[in-house]
Image 1 (tube, rainbow, N blue to C red):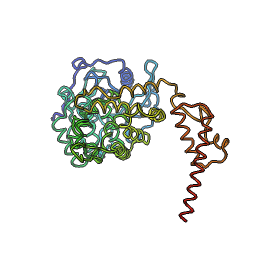
Image 2: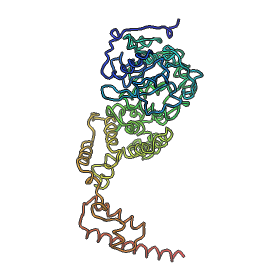
Image 3: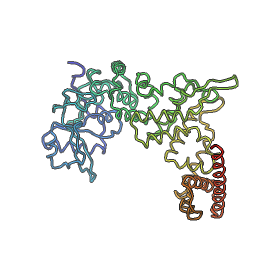
Image 4: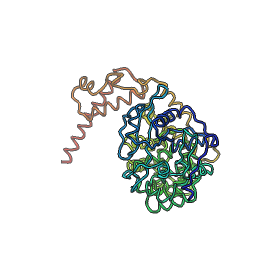
Length: 498
């Protein structure tokens, strides 16, 4: 009998497990299943978290009752969710607990038959609890909680690995990875979220799988979501370092690892090369950053490598001219490759493109300030600016002293304190000036000229706050006269050319 076939149990008390009120719906569902003569267990991540003293996100139940038998239990209501072939053998039911309806996922004991890549087309057959545990990814995720006996059932040595803080695949690591290559990424996530270690066999198996191209076999949307989960969590920096050391980052985000060895001017970046800065900035993000912020932070300086120019004299320095624009375009290509939504792509592009110009916000014209402050992604741009400055080490300056940041933050607070109507002055809404007004007052005007005039008037209103209609009347007449003069000059030039 191997270590992975050993069956053991441990009482809840010996494991220090205390069941809180959040376990109520799962206990209630298990009691219902028991009452109909079937077995029921809480299994997976919830049991792991209970042992570790963490609050589980959700509770999954497994049972020997088949889907049709579960649905025939009168205490359960049918869920509106329609199971797909991928979720075959899983029944979702709605259960009322203390006046609150909860959706419970109940899986019939299963084992895989002819496992396929990603398990999307894997055939399953109903089995027993041991088979169900053995089909899972890591030992720490295969523990079953028997509520009726008050015991945790362990077929795979998961309790030992929790005590040793090991991330270990169940059975043969190469088989688990072959079944679903995403498990490579999940190993990195669990190791860093739980602050555990990789078992030596886990590292060996992952590196071998990466070399054999298994990362490229992960569905793009699943890879994107797993990368985002890694980046959002506070352990993001160590997770990115793991991806690099395991050879994964070179395959999924080579634009990021390209920052290694790209030197930066020491009077602005004493922390080291671009790669070092890319890692450091991850430490200075908020505890709960948005998806677009973490991706903007990771990718904000990828344009530095392609734009690097060496000093032309001893008085010059390393430069990265327009790296923000080049980096924004590179980021757009990466995000499209990872199948991000158009909204995410546009927001992250905007943040990266403006991550340098935000420093000039206090000196901008009011019209430019309003447009920047009014962008839906501005708050994340501000957070990126804070983290970018904090992670840039400069001689004689403590990292926590961020130049100009207080002024920028003050402008943002001022902007937010205004009512929505006052945040973005509008010629049409506030003064009734639009294309129809121009035509009605000044006669037929060409479309391009209308746009040019309105843009000029808009700048005039935003920057100077003028409300006197006579001033706009005068401005339009000046522009029309100028337009006619330019038109005559152009006509004369055309005749001379002929």
